[in-house]
Image (cartoon, rainbow, N blue to C red; front, top):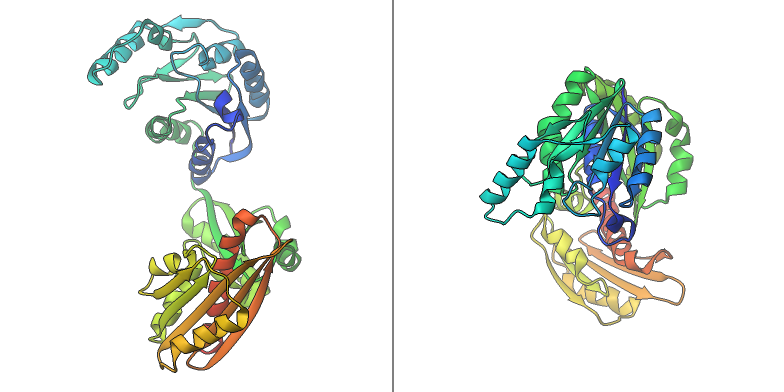
Length: 383
């Protein structure tokens, strides 16, 4: 399979003024057609440095895609950088200048003389008309390798990738199949524990297995290179079975499954209603549950003692046969957060505490995921 690299160009990216979403989007598109990506680079608006990175990338990869730096201003140096990297001059294309002027006319905007420089592209390059913006894109071959230079505006880049770049790559590199991914979701255990259970599988070549940690959850990614979805399933399924057996009921689902969705399904299967009482979590638990089920609740920013939380939960349920009441209270301590949980169900009452010592900004996410997992496990145990 061919290898690709991505270069995101723009000093504003390095200064943190905007986030580079283009690289992620392009990477997903290339992955889906079976192209490997081993590196991605962010670089500022300097033609000499960009040219150096382009030359280095071309030593390693077959396909190079750049985004950004195709505008009309002085700090849009991609055209110059590519010309430097490929030892050619910039060349004026009258037909591009006509397209640019027509585009501005259609948008009922005046065209400035500096927009004329967008009609200059490297002499070895082939222009790509941009139907949704004013900046023409281009591509050029360097030996058996190809460079695509796309605008940095996301919707322009996405349009050109879908309509021009991907069809070209599929044909030029005779691409068949792709890289197919399944993600298993695990909660209630830490990343190191999951790694201990399935570490041997993380050494596989195809499919590959990797971990990604989130507050209160771990994603296990299984990625297979195959000629078709059916062929990928043959590779993925036995590895998925091994992982599910290793992590047990700590795995709550795959791909688009969510914890709140699993809880909602368990409640519906048993004709149970759910009510929430939450303190210091900004109402996020109730909000997430209400996206997937009818759910009542009360939220508060006040503090509450664990015993009082449990008492209120049991009073709200008041022995109603089809009602589950879940109480959640997040308490900030000097070096951590403590999450107090209380659940009253038709089959019993349960209380628990979960500790969190990570970034304070993620404490709410941890609390909500831990609370949903707490009630999920009780529902599973009694089903």
